[in-house]
Image 1 (cartoon, rainbow, N blue to C red):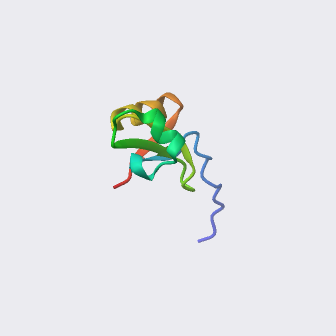
Image 2 (image 1 turned 120 degrees about the vertical axis):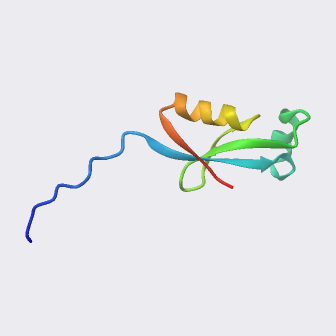
Length: 75
């Protein structure tokens, strides 16, 4: 069968990944700003670049959605 197929439309929203990050693994200057937390949550692009760090998982999802991104949880 020879049927012309137009490419799928470009995604209007981008996927971001939400993952837990141990504060001890962060640079010292960031650790100083975190307060007493031991874990924070990062919002990451698919290439792994960190876009944001927030105090809790729900806030990470809300932040992503407010910026028209589709968050996905990473284990």
